[in-house]
Length: 245
Image 1: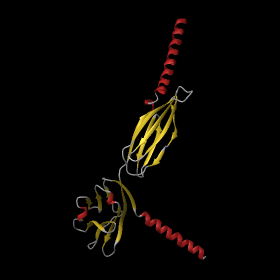
Image 2: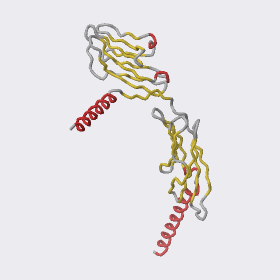
Image 3: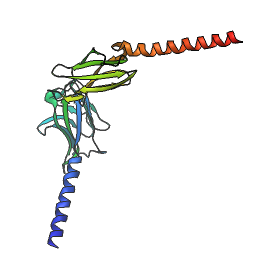
């Protein structure tokens, strides 16, 4: 019985921790962009109440008071826009130093939290460059083509090989993706007849593309030659029929 009570207590504590962690909203923002911080419930301020937005629980951003205009504190003047109807705050042009916890509390006879955000400001990813070169055809297969592709960013690169045989292409070797030194994702892949290099993180994305047919003329030419032969045979056959009639 004591064991059951102990396990039940652990379960209740776990549920409380999960509920508590879910009340903090995680927000990712690209450096230089804005973020809107909303109060997560309807708040009606009483005569002696204030609603205060804070940064890391030490620096005040904005104070809303009943019947008065909101007060934007010195460090956020020109950077914060307030919305009186719902006590929301928009912070502009966020920088790395703005990463942290923002919370709103009603301060009065009884203090209570009404919103909390954990904001992380990330740099946008750098531009990516895709270089593709023809690696020649596979031995014994005149309709095949091999292309080598290298995907480069400011601090990393990956290379991969693509093999095409009669208009059918596949990724044949090398790397397909990796995490760069700055923590972003670098990926190279094929979509139909296009090689795509994709550089991304949680707030931004850049890409570069090349058409495989630009580097495998023998494959595109193969299809055209086959079509020309088929057309020639068709015309010859029609001519024979006309002569016979």
